[in-house]
Length: 300
Ligand SMILES: [Zn+2]
Image (cartoon, rainbow, N blue to C red; front, side, top):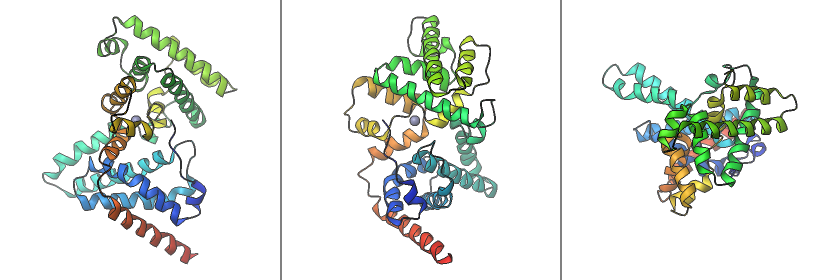
């Protein structure tokens, strides 16, 4: 389910061709993301260009725990927020009505690193570990095609809904059935955690979460941050072409619309509109990157 990763070493070495590939690959989905929040076409392209320049500058500190796509979207999100913020400060008139909600929406939509990091006692390593454990659980649940189970758990752990609400929303006869699914999922997560983590700390945290006595673990934040349940681009492409089994298609729509995942929305819309000609814009992006790379080389 994992998308192919670009060669980070080549990117860090300033390989023009690899950066060109990355721009051709990611420009469309990033543009979709920006377009939802920014109306002006020229500004959209500026933000996209700043995103890639930011990626170039930061590539040496790339954290391999996250995917390259997450890295790019993180920068893109910050650049978009910067723009909306500047516009809010500048525009004293009607513009605020439009840009303030957009900013607020960004703030609540997506857990930012500062929200995720430092709110619990698990530590950065523990959060990476939990992210891997959640991904492993999601992968085996996908493989078993247990769509209802993953929806229940995602609503409880990532969206932080209550048992009763989840039962009603998913048409499950009573909330004790939901509690049972949650209990079994957490037990399985504890087992997976024990296999990953020799210290046993994460397993203990999860066990405490089962008993409901301890909330030191930021499950929802880590779930979002690690994109634990984000289906790969391959699946979004299948959905866009109508070539998905009903169970998987239903889950994809749930994740995109109910969980309201902005990165997956951007991916899907990019694939839906794949016939649009982005080549001239990608060429401009590639040209600006080459200027940056050669300029940097020239300065030593
Ligand atoms: Zn997603």
